[in-house]
Length: 123
Ligand code: SF4
Ligand code: SF4
Image 1 (cartoon, rainbow, N blue to C red):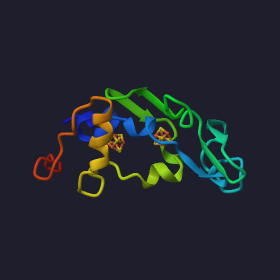
Image 2: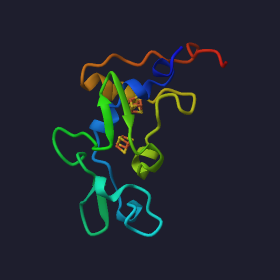
Image 3: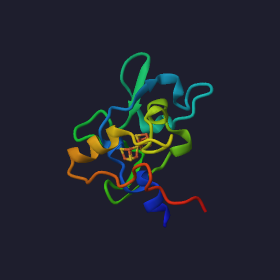
Image 4: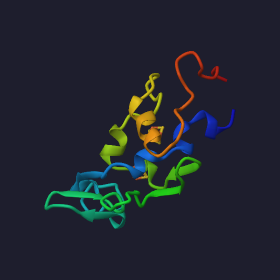
């Protein structure tokens, strides 16, 4: 089983085109201790920023590469902001995130195939 079958996020990416990715401004790397590339963010309010592209319609976070529903990657994965870290990836905790299939259905993508009992055996 290749990595694109094993990790459904790598062939999905719909959540990165659905939400406004907003976070406390100091998560950006032009603040002490910040980590999100500031150049990929824009100001929302005095205290908040968002990922560029996620505040526009159609939404698409500027850090997302690839084609949604085929092959995608977060180009700042290690430095992604808090909302991205808090959205539970499908099956990350051993259970499906129903929001994933809901988002996928909104653009005509089929439900993800993984459900309890269908996971590949650990190598
Ligand atoms: S919607 Fe779910 S499966 Fe798709 S990329 Fe986001 S977390 Fe992964
Ligand atoms: S920062 Fe990465 S994980 Fe977060 S929305 Fe953008 S592409 Fe997706």
